[in-house]
Amino acid sequence: MSNIYDKEITKDNKTFKKVALGYIRADKSPCDCCDEDKVLATIWPLCGDALCICKDCLTKIVDEF
Image (cartoon, rainbow, N blue to C red):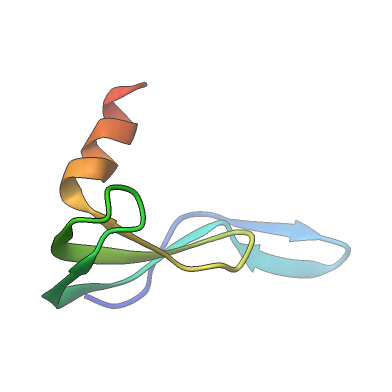
């Protein structure tokens, strides 16, 4: 899976992607949230940092809504 973007925003005549799902890692690595070795999604938020998060942690975040 490659670069699934949410909506774009424009500020000061520059366009930014709000959120981007870069890829799903096939190998297991430590999750940025729970530190357990799991399959991870790499997500780039607006701030530009990368977040590597497992499905369990992402589901917990979504369930809070």
